[in-house]
Image (cartoon, rainbow, N blue to C red; front, side):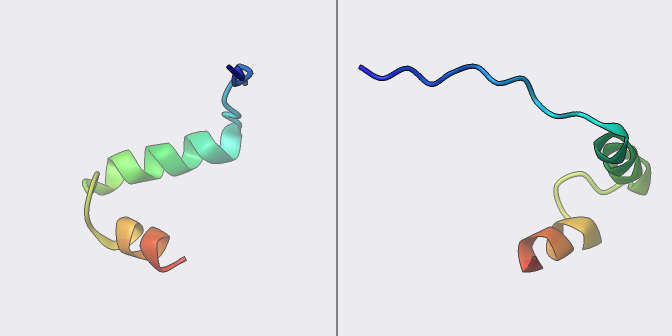
Length: 40
């Protein structure tokens, strides 16, 4: 059985800013940011 190695997530300032923007937008699972993500 092959093991998948552990890799810590990359959480840099850009990621933190995007998460903060998403939380402040009031849209968590739907809305314009989700639509743009799905389009990309």
